Image 1: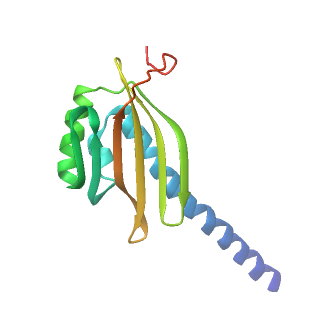
Image 2 (image 1 turned 180 degrees about the horizontal axis):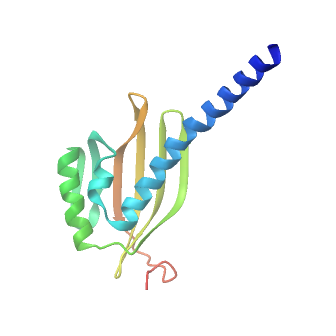
Length: 144
């Protein structure tokens, strides 16, 4: 009985730890997919109530913008700068935040993207998203 109890506790601990990591990894994957496909609605479903949004090529710079307004701006941006790909270059995290950067690839230009997620009420939500035009366009990154 003691062995069975120890075994069950071990299973719960193992499953509990792996279960906690899956949603966070899934969240990052979902954001990357939204950027890759230009799905502003899917991306906005992961926004905090207010976010920081910067799109330098469109002269968009908001320290705090309501999530529905940010979604509207991103829909217009994705229509104008249709994505061909999104490539992650760096990821990092700690218990209260996650972030990653990458390259948003279009037919004619690339953008460096930075996304910051903060833990809010037990879940990670997008707090900051920046699109900055890449002045150095690496031809190996440009989509064909």
